Length: 493
Image (cartoon, rainbow, N blue to C red; front, side, top):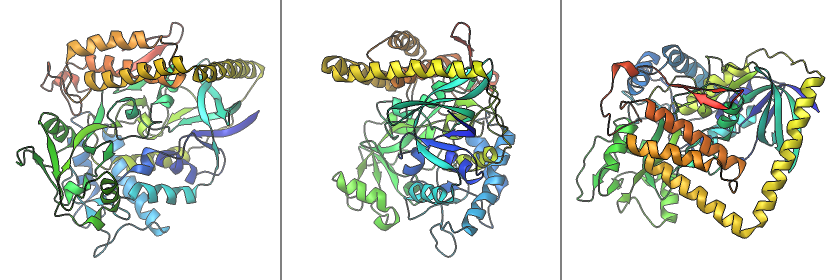
């Protein structure tokens, strides 16, 4: 058994930002692939002489539709600027054009998006942070948090097929859950398991109804919003422009969703400006310099999640959360474009700079951990056996894919109370499906929390749009919380 001051779970910018600012601990990653790695759009920072953190603050608050935590947003825009400038001094190079090249994206009042090699920002940004990481990285999947009363003592981790015990403060930085949807921009592993594990341990959840849909996606491939910032237009099947392309993402997504067909006209955009988009679309048979690109919205970014304070702290002692899995309040009801990498960077450093005390471990803690280890060894062995049964495997996959489609249909861009009510009953029945893996059932748990929160918010605000309550209401200028009652396992609002 190992004892560590801090156990970080996640391979994206949030986890790597933590690991830049401390020398002691372990960083676990289940897969090298992350949303941070795939990020095309860039990072929003007010560094131009005609811009300011105050303007960036105002844009974030406006797009967040009266639900942003003001203190969190102030930290984001002010500390974010300082951090990015520090990284530039350390050698991180952004695209240049008479100084640093600044792009425009939806919801921003100024051009303030920094890119690296056009639309390869996430790849290079993540690689740079990885090079600055100070703590040891290990491949491993978080299975369960070790908990005694309201205190987290460590974690149960699957590592190369073996179940291991680690004691220490735990930080969840595992990303979002948009891969639960049938239409998504996310890597397949982004099923929200880290969020669900925190919830199962008693962590409070917040704003679970808010999930952002990216407007321009072609066959699961995200087409950077920065292209619209460079002048690409959205047209319908009659060739007519129908929306201001630089309005916030929720507005543009709904407008596209209600068209019979939508296309991105990027024929005037130089392909070298967006090499990743150009290359991937060419592989899919489309040359955006010569033809229109069919686009539609897809599930992209989870705004809600584990409720945290301004330094990542949760309601459970020794448990912290950072990045897309966390609800800091910086995004409110709708995330301002390219604020996500900045959030992971800023709040990752804040957690990384904390003074973590070593956790006292006694015989009862060790007993709890050993019981959890044995339980998971049994669970994982059962799941291996199910994978060998081709009929059960096929039935389980079909059931899970049906769930993903129903999630898209019932908790998508435009929502209806009656349909969401029926979906609650459906997900409750799916939670008992023994043909599904633990990870899949945890995804279904999150879907239940999301739809229950969406039903409770009887209005339309940001990326939560209800056809039966289409107006914004003053009484809903507050976040919706979810907490679990540990004795019964029943959750409540």
